[in-house]
Length: 230
Image (tube, rainbow, N blue to C red):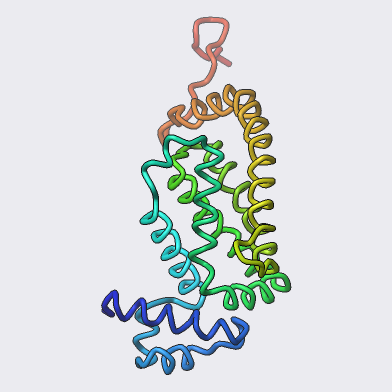
């Protein structure tokens, strides 16, 4: 199996090629040649280019978590999440052109767009964790998906904002989080309304089923259960 160093080299090779090519134009041979490895090593590192994208995003997640400042936990949830998202964009900065090229295909390829949303949603779950916001169940799913949708729009602003300090991005993040607070409030109300129904469904799913081979006994007749003689 390839070492972690080789795995990272293959990911870096792919992202480097993505800076100047659309994802559909990048061949596995090109990834191997750019990484200085054999084609079979690329296969050992991934099942395909989508795996390399997932690994790249996971690497960004880990870098954000590593940069996490424990002192931020004294701030409000909104301020913590603001700092985390800005940190993520800072880490993404060296890969701006790769992300720009990726988006060119995403906007034209619904299947890739759906896959990318799934990856972004997973990453946003970890961004919430980095901000000290950990939920479970419906609320976790809802918050991660909502943040993913907001972040995808935020990336569009980020790609167009070349000003030092990205002032437009900062405003967009602040607006997104303000709207997000309203959404979370609505989600909490929906969760309270849905909770009894979900609990009932859970009890229904846990109800033991009738063992195979056992049929329902016939109903008793009026004379105590014995069939009437002809």
